Each structure stands twice: as structure tokens, then as C-alpha cells.
Amino acid sequence: ACLFVPGVAAANAEDDDVQTNIVGTYLKLANQGDTFAQYFIAHRYEIGKGVPLDRGKPLLWYEKAAAVGNSFGMNISAC
Image 1: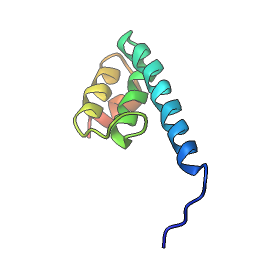
Image 2 (image 1 turned 180 degrees about the vertical axis):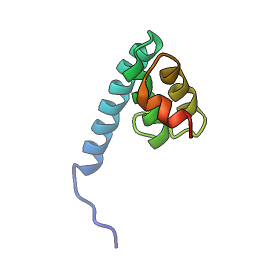
Image 3 (image 1 turned 60 degrees about the vertical axis):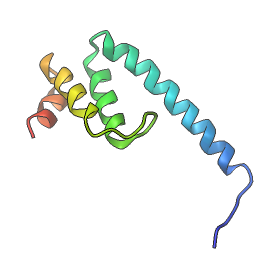
């Protein structure tokens, strides 16, 4: 049985918009070389939050972060 709660779908849509905006901001920073933002973007692609789930893009971003010294990126890209 499904339970429909008015307003929940709208709240989820608003959350998606917020998440997309957050990712957009971090993506700009990541492209400017911010290592935390690169790690953040990698993680978001890995979990599909604010961006479509993607199995290839996380490694790309983790490697970018690792290449400039981000220890989290180094640990993950070494796996």
C-alpha cells in the first residue's frame, strides 16, 4: 500500500533543486582547482545526489583531487 502525503513530492522536488544548485556551485570551484570541491563532486556522482549517478565520473574527479594533494582523493583513487 502506498501512502500519499501532500507536499512530500513538492518538498522532494525542492530538495532536488537545492542539491543541483549546491553541485553547480561546487562544480565551478572544482573546475577552478579547489581540491575539496573536486572530492565533493566525485562523491556526489558516486551517490547520485544533485547529479545523475555515474560510475565513471567519480574516479576522474577523485584522481584530479589526488593529483593536487587531496588526501581523501588519494586514498580513494588508489583503491
